[in-house]
Amino acid sequence: MSELFKSIRRTPYQSLASLLILFFTLFLSLFFFNLTAFFYGILSYIEAKPQVTVYFQTQTSEKDIFKIRDTVVKSGKTASVKYISKEEALKIYQELNKNNPLLLEMVSADILPASLEISTKKPEHLSEIAEYLKKTAGVDEVEFQKTIVDRLLLVTNVLRKTSMFIFVFLVLISFMVLMTTTAFKIALKKDEIELLRLLGASILDIRKPFLSEGVFFGFCGGTFAWSIFFIIFFYLQPFLNSYLYGIPRLPFYQFSHYNLYVWPPSLYYLALVYFLTIFFGMLIGFLGNYLSTSKYIK
Amino acid sequence: MIKFDNVTKKFPLGNLALDNISFEIDDNEFLFLVGPSGAGKTTVIKLIIREMLPSAGSIFVDSEDITDKNFRQIEILRRSMGVVFQDFKILPEKNVFENIALALTVTKISNRQIKQEVEQVLSLVGLADKKLMFPLQLSAGELQRVVIARAISGKRNIILADEPTGNLDPKTTWEIMKIFKKLEGKKTILIATHNVDVVNSFKKRVISLKNGRIAKDQRKGGYEI
Image (cartoon, rainbow over all chains, first blue to last red; front, side):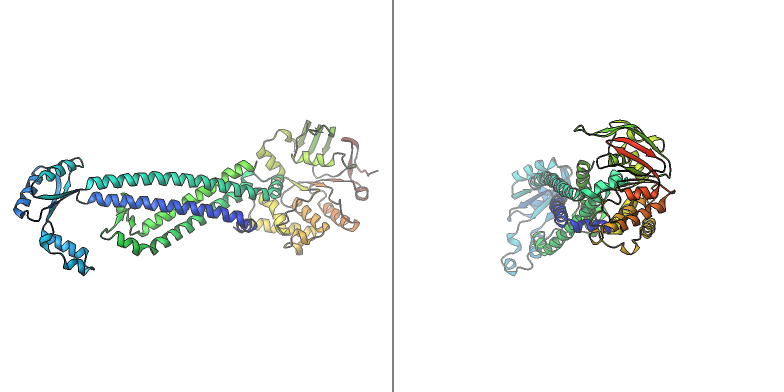
């Protein structure tokens, strides 16, 4: 370890360059990783919500609404149908706007529409039910979640591909910077390397300090990136809270049963992300220096 | 045992460093390799440590031909030899202790053993109190002792010294030679030199090289210019 710190002290700028490139690579990768995970979380959340919401005209009677509900239920294509009366709609509205008295004063149950929240057994039944409801008398608006889900899925997929591209691009840049800085360090240690060869050191003995250095920079770069990313994240949490109001918990893909939540980030999620960050950091550091030493130490 | 069997070394530009030479060095033998500059002394040492390959002939160390060894075998071979390089090859950013320890780290022994071994060789060369000093703080004689300490550290049974007293004053020269004298009979020692006084006073085997050929090989020889 002392040899490692001595080497860093001897080449401070090259070491800083290696550390910074790994930091930026891992920090940006962390940003995109979390963003993608976040979008997947929102996607799962929306998919779990009622997929078709039908709002009725204010003059439509409860009797007519129940008739429509019964028809939809009898079709056998629904998983659940929930009736929201005007009074319940008012309660929901009041709960959502409890901090804004001005908005509460202006609204009464009469002006809010009653609605049905419908979930289907299969996604392909969505458009069929939505089409039927649109043509039914007394219906004011049909909100069809599929378009939102499709759009979100599209955004998430684009984001995932972009993230992968950026990650690969950053890793390549990291390799180039690590190879250049290590080549410089090898040049500075030329005499020592030559002497070690004459003393009978194996190639691995000579490469080991460079490889350890790469792993060390990966570990440090990963730790800094993770720390700074989550410091910023928690600093912005109140701001994010206002945007994600009403969304309780977003799972990390399908791993909610392992207590892995992107929002609000659970301890297990933070630990997993830290492990992945330092693992990739150390791997990039090791491989970058491995390539460099393979090329320059013969 | 070291054996040169009709060894020729010709450099790419055509100059002949060694011309078909043969000789044998027994285990724990003490001998001098003498000759004027350019006679081929350094080339002999470089060939023994496989820093270069002969153009023709074979070189045997412990009955094994080292000219056809692979990288791994060369590493093992070099770990059995200690070399006092003409240009010292001391690392300026490392202190005396670290410079000597470097030779032991390649032998895969524990840090405790390295510490013990370094302390031991430093006492032998009389530098025990200077182990934390850096090369720039040492005199030429002290630097030469560091190089010798590095060469004799560990289980190296062949010591090859290339002009170990080259730039030293007579007093320091004798102090250095006393260190080699202490190792006599314990290790094979080959000293390449053109110091007439040193060679003549030791009365040991002397191989004289001239223009890449062996001019003389005497059991209790001397050095005539």
